[in-house]
Image (tube, rainbow over all chains, first blue to last red):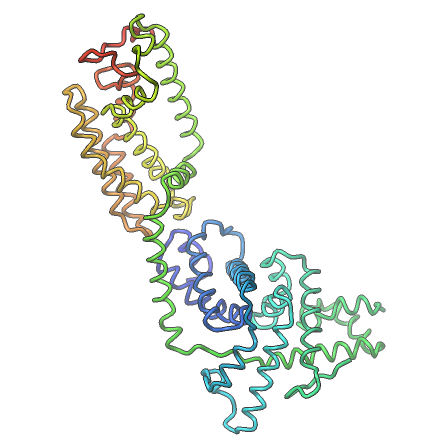
Length: 197
Length: 288
């Protein structure tokens, strides 16, 4: 099913098309949510909420728009809503990853780390540092960075997705990378290749 | 040559390989001659390479295998809650939103005709009928109207008509299924179908046979709608549309309404009966 067929199916309320759509986007949406909200339980809730929203409001999708841009937009909004709600009872996002590792809850991705214990520790430290660095970036800067760096959306697509100008996208991205560089460049960073200016 | 400011503006695109070929040459030429910009570009690039090392904890194959089932369960709950909780006003609003513009114009025309008839009746009615009975208060008069079986039947028919218009005018080629609000229509249909037996049994007057038959026909169609699949039962919707057309439901509704407006046998009273056992025939029927 190509994108046009998928969109037609979704517009008709075809359940099979919706299922295919979920299969296609579930990982993208989940991992974006995970990076945005910082923990697996919330990421699962947010990602499912994204698909429920799509199911409820596919009528608002304009057929000339790109499906992926629209989905990322819905996902971004859901993440921002979640972060705002959570601000009432804040919980540090990056620490959860550290805690889960500290408790020995090793996820499959972590388990792909090298068997060499020394290298495994080094990798884990680097991951923790990256997570913490990402946590220092504002939600909007983070979203722009994640969409460009990991989801590989082009700058124009990000601008369309987040309803920003390309200039703003570039500006957010530049600021995000500078902040990451500052955090990652701190003395003692494991596996650090960059230097502070 | 470009300025450092311009170079920084191009840096993001250069880092992600989005710089147009023509600008690429200028940009890299600037880096050759500007150590500060070259250093910054190198540092940002190194940061991105570190970020490439980012690994997210994958929740595992079981999580992904069950993802759809969990979502489908939530959708089921939401659909059930939706059909149970949507207030009548919201459902009607949705139903009205789905109607084409001409239906509003037609409805407005019908309201004007009925209003004209009512005004005509009160102005030209015999003196004994012009004012309410002495001692009859407005609320009791209203209550009498709302309890009149013919009035209830007409209201029932009007609500059914609004619902059916939303369904009949739905075109899957140009409208999405969400605009149809099938779950809302199913709920309203269920509610209306539940009232049908009561309304039908209250229409005891032999002259109300046409009204009674119409209520019965509508009941069957409403039950058909109430039993559609909530998701995407487009075939079922199509069957309902065909049934409405074949049975000439809208024509029958119009005929009943015209008979009612003209004060025919099946018309509800314009106001509470003045005390007589049978409703007096409208003396101004010909004038309207």
